[in-house]
Image (cartoon, rainbow, N blue to C red; front, side):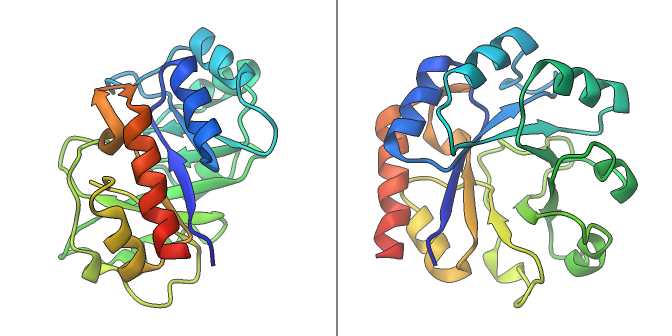
Length: 207
């Protein structure tokens, strides 16, 4: 099985183009204002317009109100929604678009019990736990905490870098990996050389 690759937190057209040319499967746009990788609607539209066919455009939200998501969807052609907060299953299901649900992994939480409510999700994204931040922390988590045989495709996130993604793919065998800070020069600014190295790390394990 080939591990898919998503680059999240893109804020510039040139970074999105570089990521696509290097071979990523999906790009992520953050519609969560407190994030340093937040992208406004006009810039999001410009980035989306630069993306060729067959690359999935994912919109990331954290505990939005319904009108926030609807406003983005009226202006931006997203293929997939990503919910990173404490959104209810009913909320996630309410936009006539497929979605993935993120969970912040920690040893004292029942991951299966939490995620089982989101059985309609197309996949489950597993990220490092932080008590205030929702993704993009640069921190990893103990991959041994991931239960075997989860019934949904697993998207592995949290502290992935060109240096450790090969080991992550080898151990977890996720459907996809999702990286943001691990391929940046500064927050929100991606580094094409790091993206290339990250992709190579994944492909080496898929060979």
